[in-house]
Amino acid sequence: MKKDIKEILFWIFLLIGIALLIWNVFGNSPTELITLSTLIFTLLLKVWSISDRQIKSEVKTNRLERSFMKLVKDFKEHKHKKN
Image 1 (cartoon, rainbow, N blue to C red):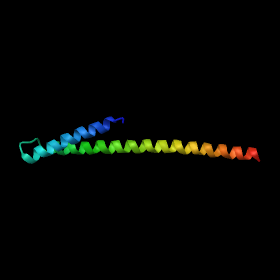
Image 2 (image 1 turned 180 degrees about the vertical axis):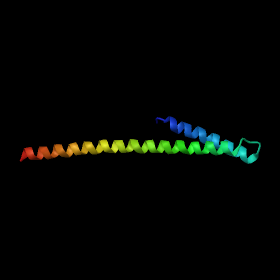
Image 3 (image 1 turned 120 degrees about the vertical axis):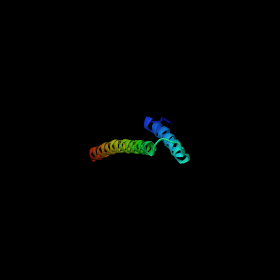
Image 4 (image 1 turned 90 degrees about the vertical axis):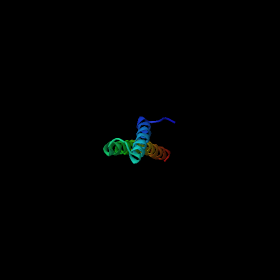
């Protein structure tokens, strides 16, 4: 299974965000802005990854649709040649 760099970065930043959140709860932590920024960036990576997968899926669907259209055309031509 091939891992995308965005997925790897998502998991790394998620772990960092959770660690910062826990650190923030127990005190002596960096500012809340840093924690919030890390978590927002993590969500941004996940949305980016999901949108890329959806675009790739649409491209595959379009290719498949074109292939079926060619197949239908070939069947129609074959049917007309028999008649």
